[in-house]
Image 1 (tube, helix red, strand yellow):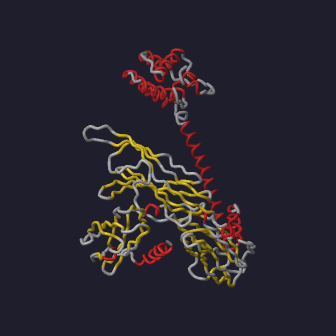
Image 2 (cartoon, one colour):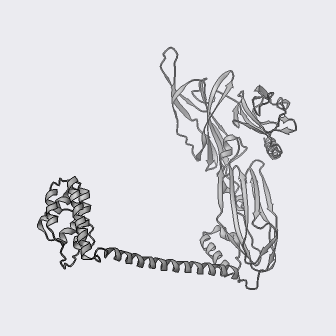
Image 3 (spheres, one colour):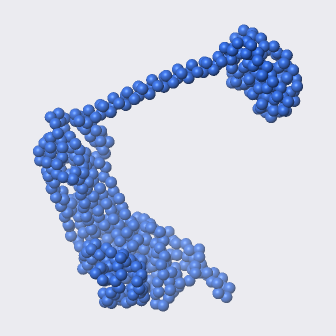
Amino acid sequence: MRKKILIILFLALISYSWGQVNASIDSFNVNSGSIIQLHITKVQNKSKADLTSLAQNFSIAFSNADTDSNNINIGLIAKNTGIQIIPPIRFGKEFTNPLSVNVVKFEPTAGANQRKDIKLEALITPSNIYYTNIPFVYTLNLYLATAVAKLKLQSLEFNHITIKKIGSLKQRTQQINGTKYYIYAQQFLLTPTEAGNIDLHAVSLGGVQQNSINGELDQPFNISSNELNLTVQDFPANLAAESIFPAQMVSVSESWSVSNNNVKTGEPFSRSLTVTASGIPANLIANLNFNLPNNVNGYPENITTNDDFSAIESGGKLIGSKVFKIAYIAHQAGSVKFSPITLNWYDINSGKVNTIKIPQHVFNVIKVNDNQASFIPNANVADKYNSNNNLSNNVNTLMQLLNSSKYLNIFLISLSIFVWLGIILILLRIRRSIVTKKQSKIKQNEITNKPLTDRLLATQEARQQIENACKVQDIHQLNTALIFWASVYLDKKIYSISEINRFVHNSDLKQLINKINLALYRNEKFNDYTQLVKVIAALDITLPNQRQSQIDIADLYPK
């Protein structure tokens, strides 16, 4: 088993050199006797495929490899069970990438109540050892060779197991022992929470078989999957105590914000380290320990994690990644050395502890000027990853950057600009307010400042507008005309006909105004147009010295 896994890993590593002709399969887990759909895509390659490498472990059910198509489909049937390697296929000077497939012996009677035309199969990712908190893939395959409806799957629950659904339901077709099946596959990620023997009990599925021949009625059915059993172990405590974490494969990438080995005092530069592990979630990846050089301050950011489930659907692994970012500021010229970082992980396939060493980095610190602020270096940056003081760390970073004369000058200049802009905006706003008040006062006094003769002419025009509105019996036109007339008559700005009753002491006009208000706001009928014209005509333009009283908004609407 280990030998096969090593072969898979070796082929995966060398497959990067074969990128112009890409190969893929529909599913990692297939039954013995089933057709494996191999899809090949060519890019600018007109060579024919050489399929001789497949003959050792596979039979070819069908193929269009002899055509000029860039999309080639080949049906393969594995000769053996277990993990099988689909070798690279030659296209002239190029090769497809190698693929692995898990061929499971098909046993129709493994589950209770199995039928030839309806089968339910449970599969798990093959492994030598299962550990607590390390997930594995559980797949349910439904095989249908007949029409069914009203399917209902039993609730999926197992003792001491957490379950996460992966992706959506996948559909494919396969010929098995001469019968064409429609296969529906759903994958789940199962994570053991306790050690010991764990039984993955049979899962039942109910529904009805649809019969359209001879008018037969639909027949209900209930089938069960096969049972699975696995032994789960706790991860060795002595390894966990040494920050050694389990995985199937681990890689580390590193980047710096500076392109060369020169940095300046007082100016920040940053470092980013990404740890990627296959087969485990990101929370199981151990934290890295950073040691600060002398005369250098470190400011770590929050650790970010990510779990990628996308590769599982195509037979791959769960990929967990953890990103460590830290900013540095050197405050003394000279040479600074960032010591190597060691990361230990346990290979759950081989059972061995592997070590990844991130090499030492040396930077030449150049002094910018003589006015550098004094920084107090942190004792151990790694401690910051175990605390929740990231906010205060960021505030300290800002304050220390401002202590540098260069950044302080920039900050003060920017602050001064914002203050002056604020003062200018306030002055413009005050000026605008004064101008607006003056314009309002001028408009308010436009009518008041008119000579008496002009007012008499305006009054005649206003009376004419009232007569015109009364002739057409337009209540809204009459409302506008009355407001205009009152403004001329009273020598003041009037906004509503309700205000007329406050300043024109005429009982007849008051009654008519109330009726007009009822017509405007309560849709009542107003028919006294002729009387209104007579009342308005009888009012002479006089200038009584009346003091304006306080107006209540409620008085502007009819009672």
